Image 1: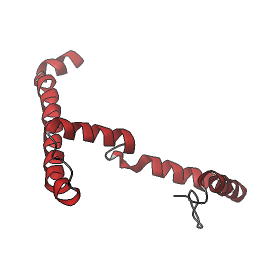
Image 2: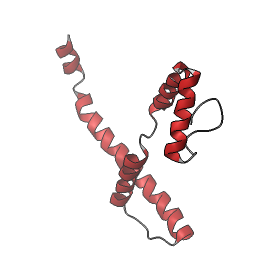
Image 3: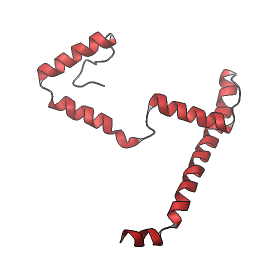
Image 4: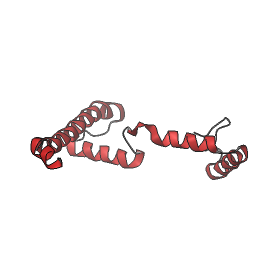
Length: 112
């Protein structure tokens, strides 16, 4: 059954990598044009090329994480928070205050 599917859909093994490369190229072009439109005029920075734009995209991915992902991390944190007892919540708040100098815990019902 699986071999039959592969035989019928061989084209996907060629089209998918090409589509991925095209997507990356378009994203690089968009970032390059936005940068070259905004950064030199606003900040006096130099214009960049496509490779530098792709490097900027990769760097932002490394530093800031996913480009979408559906917010699963936030929902997991919320579920964990809701399972905590009031004593555990207060202990968590105090720990965040000592670690983050007060910025890690808001005065409310739940953490950021």
